[in-house]
Length: 329
Ligand code: KG4
Ligand code: ZN
Image (cartoon, rainbow, N blue to C red; front, side):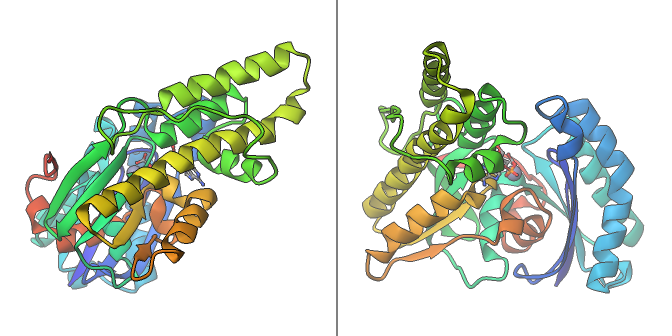
């Protein structure tokens, strides 16, 4: 079954052709990141307009790179939410128009479900497993007992971890999006240079990152006031922030897996691209016999349409609703 999938929930205009939920025949992404960088973040109305200008070309590219004609597609899918409303409307309208033109079924997909499903692409992963979903909008520990069910075990009480990366990058004057910039800079710094706090939460699998972000701000201000040069601070502070953020993510995910007696862990979302997070998980899992660790290829971590095609295939529940498929257990 070949699905033509479209993703426009934030600032990537993306289309893909995915066969049977796992085989990616094409995965086209047109990023608006450079456009929004000058404003230090995504401007929702501008994002929608950019999607409108790009979506037809991206869909055409996805079809031609997969060498598949519209007639050969079995279904169309698009992200319905959560995301920027105007941006979502563009992709959803494009997919629904194709559905009306071709009479192929339309599947609406939940964006978070799609991030989880990115782990099925080019992989053999099957439920049950535990998924750490870390993006610009979410930080959640999810239990996936079967293809149709997602249970939230814990989530952030304030900032998402990707949001914290972006805000810390802004505090340090490093540009947007902050995640990849801090990830790179941290590799030149000492993660133990500045001891930063790890938040305690009432529920064991919840996260909190806003205190950490404020601690970075205060530390930066204090060091500058003490006359230390910016260049002498940045890499160490980036590394210390990343160390604290990654430690919380890995520790709580492993704790949740142990409490559910699950030995398969997957990571998804834009922050799954983080090199320290990958390394830390791999190191921990390698010391636990029988445990397995899945992480999508970098191109499937940040927003893309291939994951939307996988979610549409594996989760028929999302066909009509697209939203509200999660429940907190
Ligand atoms: O999943 P995604 O593309 O969009 C959302 O649904 O939010 O995630 C984007 C987030 C941004 O906050 C970005 O800074 C972060 O993922 N990110 C990273 C890295 N690459 C992207 N964070 C840490 N390290 C990275 N290498
Ligand atoms: Zn996303």
